[in-house]
Amino acid sequence: MALPRQPKILLAAVGLVCIIGLFTFRLHSRDAFFATRPGYLSPNRIPTLSQKTGQLDPEAHKLPSADSFRAHFNALTRVKNITVAEAKAGCHWPQDEDVNFQFSADAEWVVTDRPDDEINSRRKAWQEYIQGKMIPWEKVKDKFEGRGVVILAGNRDTAMHLKVVLRRLTMLRSKIPMEIHYWGDEMNKATREDLASLYQPTSFNDLSQPHNIIQVKKDGPFINFQLKTAALINSKFAEPLLLDSDNVPVLDPATLYDSHVYQEYGTVFWPDIARSWPQNPAWAITNTPCRMDEYEQESGQLMVGKQRYWYHLQLAAWLNNEEGKYYNEFLLGDKDMFRFAWHALKTSYGRPKKWLTSVGVLNDDYYCGHSFAQYHPDDGRVAFLHGGLAKSTALEVMRWNKEEKGGYFRHYKRAPTDEDPAQIVHVGIKFDGATYKPNHTEDFKVAMCTDMRDLEVGNLDDILPGWEKEYEELGGYWMLEQETTAKQTLARNN
Ligand SMILES: *[C@@H]1O[C@H](CO)[C@@H](O)[C@H](O)[C@H]1NC(C)=O
Ligand SMILES: *[C@@H]1O[C@H](CO)[C@@H](O)[C@H](O)[C@H]1NC(C)=O
Image: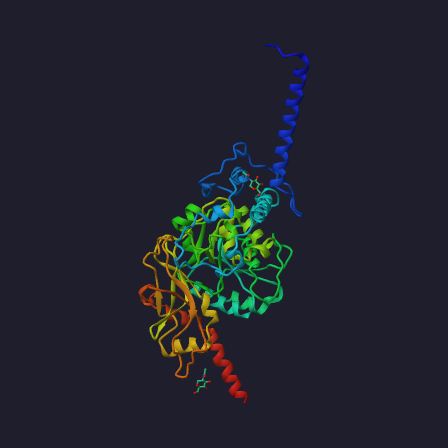
């Protein structure tokens, strides 16, 4: 049947409008994805991808490059949005189960769920960020090369911790390059030379300088979490391994890149000791139902390939920096921004087969855990010893352990279920109850400890033979040596 003349023209006009519309829409979304930033030109070559279909890729972690995530990212806005109530339903521990949650049960957002309109607007914000405001991989890919360790160092104490790490790498005969990030005057030339003399190749990057890809501000003299994501992004390495300065590698970090986990996922995120509350707004904001088989992330060490995850890292940095005031209320600084960025972008991350082991001392039947042993991604070899709480220990307690009890690294507690993250281990943070001096009083609290209740204490030599001695040889007890020197100086001057 022939159409009358008028509607034919109308149809043609509608068709033309549609084609123009589609064309401009595509142009628009393409430009938005590769938003131009000051100092960044549009890329020469736009990757051709199946953005028409725009399906979520359940195996997104196997995508070969940052730009191959485009269709996947476009599909994220079509994912069903979940409410806080729906996110909470993912975790259903019994009411009386003693789960070790990060943040107290009295926190306002733990007591009262955040309203869904707040969740919606925060979700909208990160979705707009990934659609339109990220730095294209094309613009930066030539800036990165190779593998290496990235450490953020600042004040005097972190430089002292860092020396232990550098001596350890030398002892391991590691060849992995080291890049130390600092902020402006915080590290002077003499300190840099001193550090570089301990290990080679070592290079430095000043995060306060304009050459950095992302610029961050530092506020106050204390821990600046935003500097960690910045160090990772601004690092010259294509495959950085981020390490805290008080985290001593037990194995040569270079060998971790060969692990099956890293090879498959292009990331390794190590677990922390606590879990996230089901009502943590980050679950709903990232459209991720709460997970019972997941610990928080312990970002004292992490590995990530930028070639695949350049956009993921930018989202983590954005959550940490631009939105940090909001998120820091329920995510501790940088540590969980990575995990939730990966959740938001519906991408699995690599995690080690084993959960952490607590390392510490047993005195008077009282176990005090002060460090975490973190494992090789594939097996049961300890890869790192992270001194978390050791920093806060009173020096006399450390000295008493070392000089009178045979060491500060003597015992450990490991869950027999440490390969199943869904198993609950009863964990607590407490004060050391051991009598370290004859005149010890209950009120004089001298060390914060982690404990894993109900678990047997083991001898550290069974999993890390000779560590106490090695740690001493590495100069790990520098704080005790400093104290001794200070006392001698004082005595001489009197
Ligand atoms: C989910 O929410 C975001 C922002 O809150 C919105 O842009 C998106 O269209 C929503 N998706 C669906 C499928 O409703
Ligand atoms: C313990 O006793 C010693 C000497 O008897 C004293 O110098 C020290 O201050 C006392 N410490 C505490 C915590 O009371």
